[in-house]
Image (cartoon, rainbow over all chains, first blue to last red):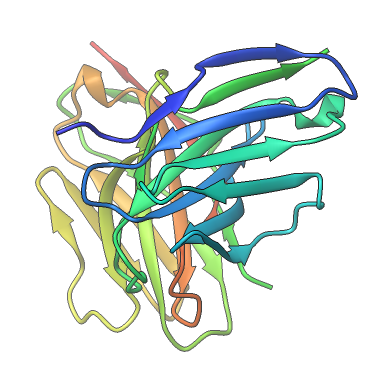
Length: 115
Length: 116
């Protein structure tokens, strides 16, 4: 049973460029959330996708956008990259509209470096 | 504002001993869920334990237990019989009940090192 998979594992970009990160949820899961984890910090919620729509959004600018496909996989797009966007980007999946106690399953992340 | 505070940036424990990782939270919501995750150097966040704000008993999952003190707004993680493989970052997180979504609010984390 495959867990949450993310690609690529590492990425190097320059300021002003655009980047796309990809996530395949755990088998049987239909909801995907994205988190940004800066070095030495806890993860911060970016947004959540369910039924191909953005359902919740954290305090991130419009440069961060996403998409969910019919097979439940998801993409995170970041435009006009800034140095401060350098971080580990984590994808988490779950099933359905979450109950309070629903745990999230995380991937190993994509390490993005902006030079 | 909702916030998770972990005041121990790093902790050391001897193998086979117990260790407590501190977590305090701030919320005005009447109901919420509290989680602990482990993050090894591979980067993946691994779920350890969950405590609901209305749960009468403290949660336990194998060697992990949660010391939940609602009045003090604390949710400390206790790891018994530490193993070398327990060396990792540990994050406390909260989900407000109104949210019912993917949003977890995480603390800054505690780095645990287990000594042989």
